[in-house]
Amino acid sequence: MLTVRYGCATDVGRLRSENQDSMYAGDGLYLVADGMGGQPAGDVASKLAIAELSTLAERQPITAAELEAGVRRANDRLLADGRQDPERYGMGTTLTGLAALAGDRWAVLNVGDSRVYRYADGRLEQLTVDHSAVQQLVDAGLLDPRAALRHPRRNVVTRSLGTEPPPVPDIELRDPAVGERFLVCSDGLTNELSDAEIATLLQESEDPQRAATQLVEQAVLAGGRDNVTVIVVQLDEIG
Image 1: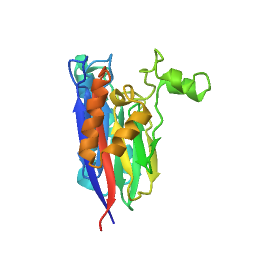
Image 2: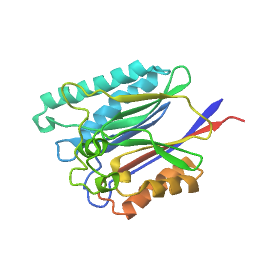
Image 3: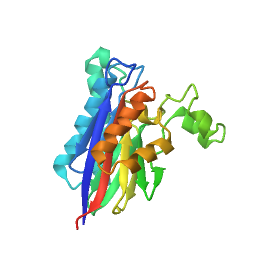
Image 4: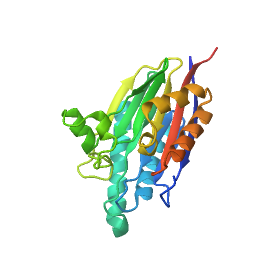
């Protein structure tokens, strides 16, 4: 039987005046939303998305269909709020995370360019695919992945909440395994730290809260050009 430990941390960073990231951790849901920079009310958009998806925690266990329906409701909520308040019209957010489902399965969810990683056996694996203009270039063989890290369009997201028609989320179902560690994060982490640096910090900290705190601290020290939000989820076995 598996048990779950988790830790989470967030920081506004060095350059931003407000934190437009929001998160939810616990009750089988581990979610991060990153309000869209350059658009109105990014902080409101991320908060609304997390508020809507977090209601699924009250209905555990959930199914993949319920998770997808929750994303649609969150999208509708952003659109409705934007119609009522002109200052919020056009607001959007990414959404990514991990959810425990009925049948002892897990779902990896993604809309946008926030990410979920899996760390196990000393190896870090990105489970989500960025919905971004740069990722499209990489997929088409027109851009080297290393060049993508500094491409001028690296922050252009091609799929987000707050759009019509509603975005189709990527949902991948997984069977859990003892010893797995998952990282859910906004791009404020991955724009500052390499995969190798992230893997090292995850390996060094057995406690998920300490790992989350150190990841955020190191991203801020490395530049902190954006808000940074991290959730580390550890799957253990009850002995």
